[in-house]
Amino acid sequence: MSDIDAADIVIVGGGPAGMLAGLLFARAGISTLVLEKHGDFLRDFRGDTVHPSTMEVLDQLGMLERFLQRPHTRLHEARGTIAGQEVVIGDLSHLKVAAPFIAIMPQWDFLDFLRDEATAFPRFRLELNAGVTRLLDDGQRITGVELGDGRTIKARKLVIAADGRGSIVRRDGWLAVTEIGSAIDVFWFRVPKAEDGGDALRGIVAPGTLLVLIDRGDYWQCGYVFRKGMGAQLQAGGIAALRARIEAVAPILGPLDTVLTDMDQMHLLTVKIDRLDCWHRPGLLAIGDAAHAMSPVGGIGINLAIQDAVAAANVLAVALRRSANVDHMLGKVEARRGLPTRLTQRAQQVAQDRIIGAVLSPGSSFNRPPWPVRLLGRFPLLRRIPGRMIGLGFRREIVRSPLAP
Image 1 (tube, rainbow, N blue to C red):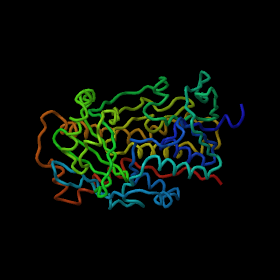
Image 2 (image 1 turned 90 degrees about the horizontal axis):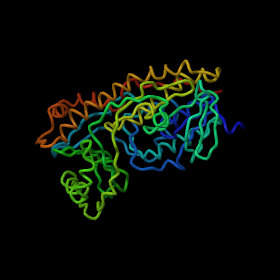
Image 3 (image 1 turned 180 degrees about the horizontal axis):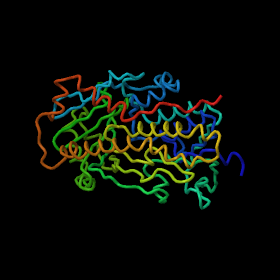
Image 4 (image 1 turned 60 degrees about the horizontal axis):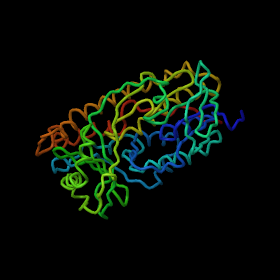
């Protein structure tokens, strides 16, 4: 097998977790190959929020200034419209970090940035149009991957699965997963944006309806949230009925009769919250959505995946440089990231079941924001608490993996 068909680390998936992990391991001087099944990163309806915890990692790597030179919009507060009233949910501006705001940037731009930065390290390789069809094992450990074109690639030390909630480790039963459940699903769709578009990110809450709007420059990326299991009912009701609901709560979008004309414009996101029972087996480690599928609530999935990648490099990079086998260390990555994952998922469950579920339940009715939101309006200092949770999450990681001489 030629050297081009092998690497010390083979990473399946070129999303945020896979690309940053590839960068960090290559930065440490470890031969790393990232395999991405698509020909580019240009796909819509993906997470577009880069939180302060992620930008803190970029700052530690000396990359933040270059990142912020890319087009983005800054969000210092988490705002929403509840029962027709504009409210502030969280204040990020007081966070003691290099970038105390959320950067709204299309995920493909963020991934392009990570690719450009990673190529500065000679031990990094990225192969596009390289879909992995199966993992290879020798009866004792995972040894590599097979691609759709029939090629096999040897992982001399480790395979990292970072291929999202549809990961090959789940599909083929390499690692068992436990479903935690979700009360919601989402229709994503686009609406052209008027010149005066308002906030870069806004949530609109009204009885029976929850709508999220993300400013994409010349259009809004919109998420219509509904109770799980209602997708077929909404589709059967037709685009006119759904369009009327959206127009009623989001006048900022303007008339939609010539914009939303077919249910095919609605892209269904089936929301799942789950996690692997164990994130690893000999020769294999799962991180990001491959290890734990997150709800879109809070837009924190990308940032949790980034923290996983940092933790994996922190735990494994030094050992990988001097040892051919780190199987005994893989559990340390899960031990480090398991608790923040469980806490985050629990917070998402509470938000979905007790808050969003109540809003979307049949016959829900309210004419003013709930009392916790009114409390935030009365005491602005309290807004820093949700601001910190949104911006930094639980147990943020500090880059400790080495830079190769």
